[in-house]
Length: 64
Image (cartoon, rainbow, N blue to C red; front, side, top):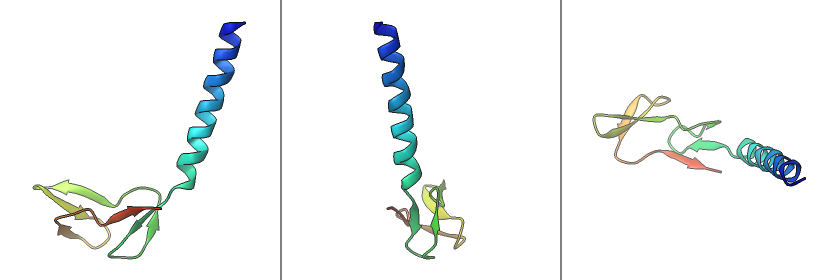
């Protein structure tokens, strides 16, 4: 009985986290584009934006 309750709780937690993650989008402040994940990656200690093809001191993405 406890295992069944635990499995149902775990399944609900997985579904809730998937629904929450699907609702969040990332917006590039420089390019103004909305995407599913951040467009920045680290290169030589700086953030490199794949959209603008430039490096920045701070990440140019905002979660919405």
